[in-house]
Length: 154
Image 1 (cartoon, one colour):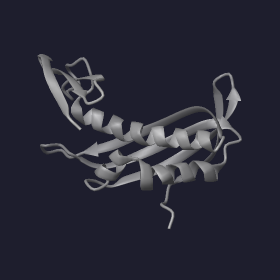
Image 2 (cartoon, one colour):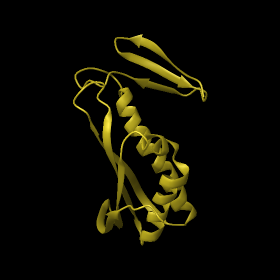
Image 3 (tube, helix red, strand yellow):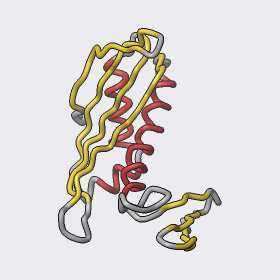
Image 4 (cartoon, helix red, strand yellow):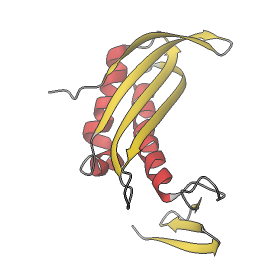
């Protein structure tokens, strides 16, 4: 993998890698900037990597998912370099008669086998996972039917 960033002025950079796709990034500071900062992109990458795995697995298991979101809640140290000290991933899966075992197994496969971002980052800080399963009631409404903490299969 080869990647590069090109300065675009102020704290803005354009990043590209082997795919040729472009990512704009900026300072992590909330006061300025036009795009996510590098640490924000790490959290987004963690959530995105596992989300892609889980939705793909749920589709293969023929689960009727109508909405899906993975939230990454990460804590940073107070002192520089202000690294992540822990993270929690929250999987919100909405659909029709979703099977809890299928959701948990999809998360398990992502955590234990497929998501390289998680595999790399869990060596640097603890990451916990929990899930919430909602029944789609139509018209944008949903009802929480199951929730739990993910525990790796033995």
